Image 1: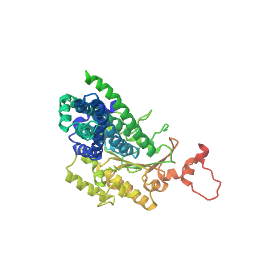
Image 2: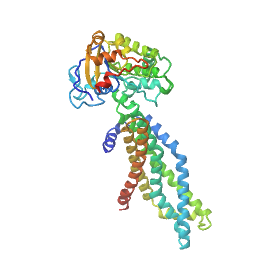
Image 3: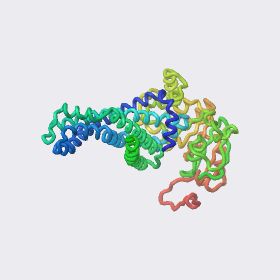
Length: 238
Length: 236
């Protein structure tokens, strides 16, 4: 997996030549996940507000709700949840597509034509996911904040004005916090892309093998996302 | 899986490797194009080992896979022109012209915009041959070109292999267990079993081979209610 990632990095200068495939993958990721990101982020923001709002209001900290929701979403929930979503939605498709190409000799056919499967298959997917996931996370953060704000306004146990929610959020959340979250998602994107493409490339044994690869790709991606989340959080907290 | 195989293929000939399923034919082909590496021994092209650097990229080799190996996400036209477009060897208009020409050669004119899933098994194999032709190969390797095909489609593919060899002088290496195909197109035939060559020679020499397993392979036929037991089974 590390070797595959390294070889893909070495193939980066070929990105411009593969730009059409990168665009295709990029739009596929957007099309497949934008609505899900929107729904998931809105309700995650709402649930965080619902869980923390009443507790903070009871202790006279109503003005802190915006900050708590804002920080939780941009530093942790949006990058981790969206990466897990993308691992399930897009990573699984990557592993299945490449796995099926492997099983049905399409990758062997590429090799006999002197076409490098890493440049042809892995590079466009990795570049597309590395660009798309951080953008989806920015979108998710904004929608999550909106969800938190609407719940804070509508819920009678919280009952904070819209402006007050965002004023507090603006006071607490710094640009650096958003950048941290987006940076994390960039690393998670590389993890998901590499793990899923690698699982696809090592697929063996027909349709059952493809199924096994997809499952392993998603499970390994999620485990590594959580692991890298801890490591990155430790580093970025310094 | 392959044990002590030693044979030469002459430039411009159609060489058929024949043998029962599981005898190592496809594995041998994969070794020849560098998809697998031999544990021991070597494969030489014009005296140069394929292990030494860029020998495989020095010669134009093409392989027609058992399943066709067409990329299902691309149209037939994109598949056929893939080698040229990926290596930027010709401008798009020229590639389109070559694709049209090669598809016509294999009797698939006008299928450029179709997806591989819209083609029959025989058409997919012919499209794979068209893709191989685009490379203008010096050596074409066919992996079970007539498997899963009805007899009529098999004849079309066999004619294609023979006429290509005559027209372009390309060296053809065919792996198959189809006796009709082998004796129809081959200049020379090797029969292998369990990774070893049992016999090698012209179709006539192979037909007259005294090797029991070869004789059995060539004469095997099904008779209802017979108590016939394969020598291959006995041997195994």
